[in-house]
Image 1: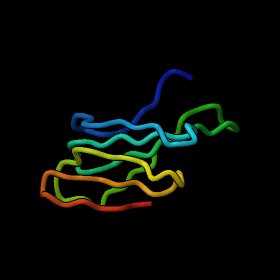
Image 2: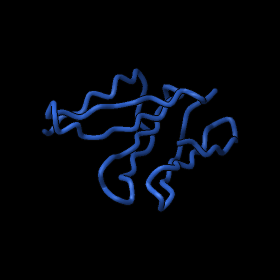
Image 3: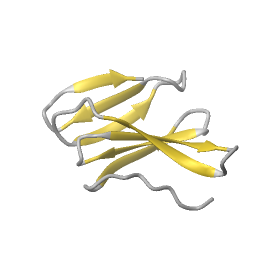
Length: 82
């Protein structure tokens, strides 16, 4: 598969693969982070949205445990999400 439909209506601002390289996260101007993973049974990429933000998410980075995600947004807040 070469296409992932993120379903965001603003620009992507940052993209990071997870430490295990089995999923990736996309920060966006849509005040969301999309976490995408490959679903082998259906042979496509799935994107789940984290919508806990009040402004553009500018930076993201994975924790080495492959579960936690650190985020920084334009409202000067840093958050840890899972």
